[in-house]
Image (cartoon, rainbow, N blue to C red; front, top):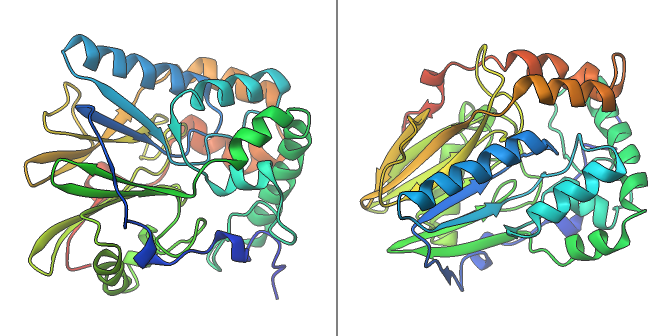
Length: 318
């Protein structure tokens, strides 16, 4: 039997899908960048902000939204403070990492709510990483206060599209219902029900570290689910760079990994091509060989993950 620490989902993480998108906030900017899983990578953040500047030079206003887990590898006081100060200058919502840094939950561990297909050694290492980061967070109470004030999700109105931005899934901050593995086991039936109950045309999520783009018609309307995997860590085979979600009326000047149009709005996953050599050097200083993060993540940081770009787009029938 596996330990529940790091696998259980605290009641405070739960919410009702029907309540998530009752009062959408209008978006006046031309372009939305939705950034999940930055994981404390300052070079990825540099690149994202640079990409936004390029958009602005093209005449577009840009809104950056961070939908959680912008902390994780930033295990030093200076980097912890630097990442949070920069991200919190934009629009942000909680991930399980930020929730546990602001105020830890009894028995939650890392707050990841890992499902059974994740091995116990990985869970244990993540719980240990969280303890190290919590010790740093406790030295920065002003940031803890700011994190504790963030919402768990955001509902936006971009033109005619109602966009639900969350971290996990429409029932939990750390839910895995929008993971690739869930889509592979018949979960689209539940996803369709979530889209009905929330009224969202687009759900943007992260948390599960594997990207996907799923588009289907639900009750006669085009609906989209997009999971960016990780902005601060590799997502694709042989590719160590991150991904983020872009939503705009105009296409990007960067070739997307995957994209779909919904009511003439371009929804895409864009590569975040940061300075990988600088990031690996910094990561190795923070998490040397044999450390929890190095064992769990260093290979992915240097070599990417197992997905090919063609596998990111999931057919509606799945």
